[in-house]
Length: 92
Length: 407
Image (cartoon, rainbow over all chains, first blue to last red; front, side, top):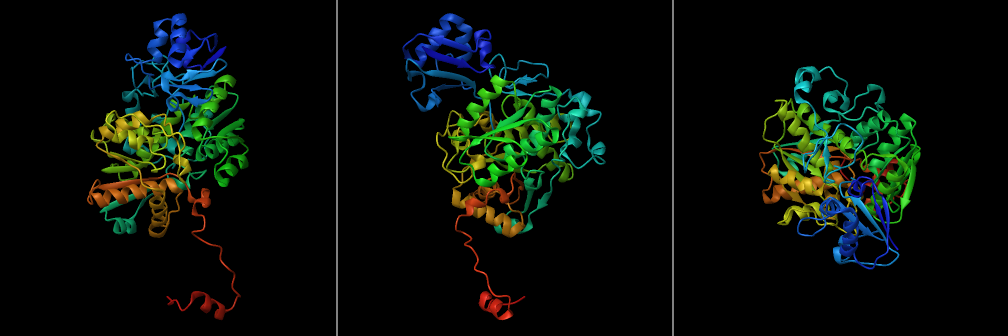
């Protein structure tokens, strides 16, 4: 099972749900598609740009590694991975 | 509060980012209401701290304020450095002398007051060192538990200070960005108030007082150029906001000072973003620089900082570590101000900009020096080798000085 953990500000996109278990195999893009099928296009629109790229206000980490330093949305998600979604506006 | 991106408005509640688009939130004031209390004549008799700008700081309850007397630091005319660098009028805004020896006492003053207004059970931050000390000291005074998340590899003085103030230092095996990520998750789970994470919109408000003080100390005038260090970019965007508010009040011209941002070449995500066509920061996975206080590879306000730099006709630059250390030396030897490397970064950027003309000789420049050099002795390595003791005799002194001329 893949564990998807959303920081509370981001969880407004899932109606307040902060932790999801997803039985799934594929890339980060595929994972977000699965979550979109559950929470609707409003989830997708808040996480992804119109052209399908990750929005700059959301950081995604796959097992603690920033997805931008992996293969972005093409990053393969291991079966038991933890994927974190956090606001990009933070720190400093 | 209002989202900078989608303009959604919120009441002044505890909110880290916009709930609608996750963009950055800004505190907004009813300028007409501020106008009655905030003008140059009323400021004169006020205490020499950042609270003199009370009408433009978002704290409702005076009893929530934890006053370590941060702010109102010296603005020093730097005549020797003017000669050395070839500038007609140069000033140093010296935040090395804040209560915990960096500008971070400013944003903490505001954010910890909000934490007290909301009766949060604990406070903390993710930090490259300076903020860790600032929040630990304020939390000590407020008697609130404090947790600071830092890269475990920080220089010793920066690990010591927060512990001395009674903060709990959580040493994260990784970069600042790793510490930031885990700190957000922990604060989120436990309901703690973390200065630069879930209190960030309020935290930012403290930093703009650097702009207010500069304006007041220049005789209610602004410089042509402000050179600022860039970590997350939030200090620079706060300067821009400070100018905007003064301008809305009619206290400053509409044209802002040119904002110039400076990062070390070994960690320059905002500078590289400024140089790129898309204007988006270029994250750095493993920062490689002696300037630990600016070693933020994924700057939270990078995009907005680039916008502010462009809109004010400023620029961004990334000097090398040797140039930065030379900048620290210049500041010490020409002006008697001992800065941590972040201050050398702004000096080095000014020096380079004078050499290639990006800053004109006749422009009135303010350099922000945001942290004290006593916190970072390790950067000097063997540059100052140990001194061998001499016998307490005048002959020994003569021999030691090696014929150096007297007087």
